[in-house]
Image (cartoon, rainbow, N blue to C red; front, side):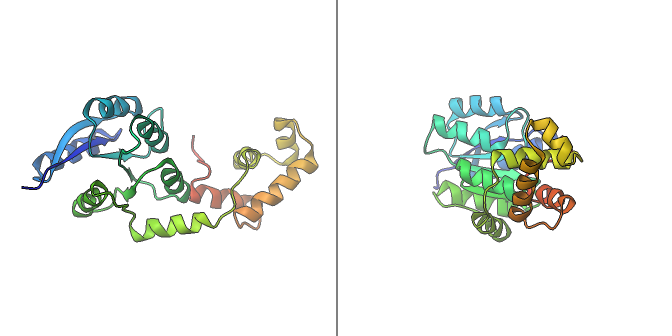
Length: 209
């Protein structure tokens, strides 16, 4: 008899958490060892249960999934985490990979594929569906925005012009203009509005905080 895979699930949406829990409890290949609705609770349950795989929602109260993943791997360098998200933004996927997640499964996927992904990761293999893998490959080729460029991008999203950004950050307008030019090049945009739109689509910024 094959040993059951011990699962910890974490999601801040009660209905999703409940649905996943019911599915795992009814499945002969899995043992549900915990269900958490916050980042801190996820870490507590991981320490208590030491599951084989963590299925983790990317958007969690207090800590995002990449931060939770990093903390879990500090507790156990052999931990296996799969990100489970409603969003397929390039930056979310990339941050998950950098944090050490072994998989990334969109919530639109059927349970059969979710179970398959968990089994792959439990066996020590990565699991990234084709469209997610494409985002990873694309992001690998992109040039990183600097911390200052991220700040200016967020201010662009608020509608500030160069003068307003310069005042906000305490720098000169020519300095802002130079940073904006670099941002446009890095996000492959032809103007400031297009840069904000593309950045939001990639997950570099959130238009609604």
